[in-house]
Image (cartoon, rainbow, N blue to C red):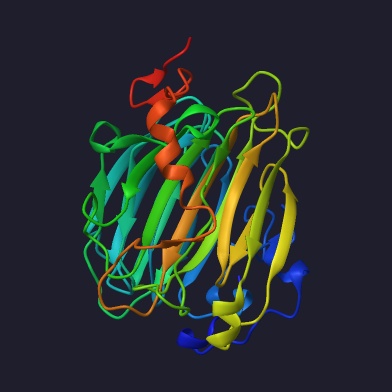
Length: 327
């Protein structure tokens, strides 16, 4: 992720800056294969870490100036949260989690800035920590899986599942941070039509955005680098007029890869035939109110009208809080 003019960050040096393959931005130890701060991304707000917990081994960290979600990708965990340096526990939660992002909608925890966090799991676990810089500290809060809204978007071969666990209107306990999960069945397109939320006309909202991908292997459940998909980001004349750097990026993405969207139209994300695609979207920006407002590429917005005559893909939803729907 690299910055756009409104957030005061530099424009990307080139397309390679927008694709971070699994393990290319690690933390200081082997248990953090992804540690992407706003500074590393070259912009102002969004970040993402991925932790791999070993059974019974506690992992401790402080949130600093960031609010974040603790979102299990595989396994579950217990967590204790304290105000920074306080020494007394503010809250503790047990997160059930899931075997894989392709098996269940999960519960999660919100953690405010200036917090000390201790995580421990009884089994090996993988946890995503989408984050955003913010000004104020909110207390921690638990989000149950059965309260996560599961929505189907698109139609036909553009049908996809959206788990709105951390989006405005459904989860309002955050200052800047927005996060949402999507599952795209094999062969389908998502993030389509291409859309933008940046400083070019006529967008009402500016958001930096991270895409973090998980791709299942042949069993449709277990993440594997064998599978793949595609992601597109590009700009138009309106971005040049707004002083934003030209982007024209078409990425092959595999399990664990990150795509960065500083500005521009993004989409589609394409799941290759045979390989389900999951991605975690992380968004935040300078606007005082959290919003996912966007503008379609006007050349392709007509496609939304064509969906009325197409049936939804019966494979969706792939998962609910109870588990997989097709098994």
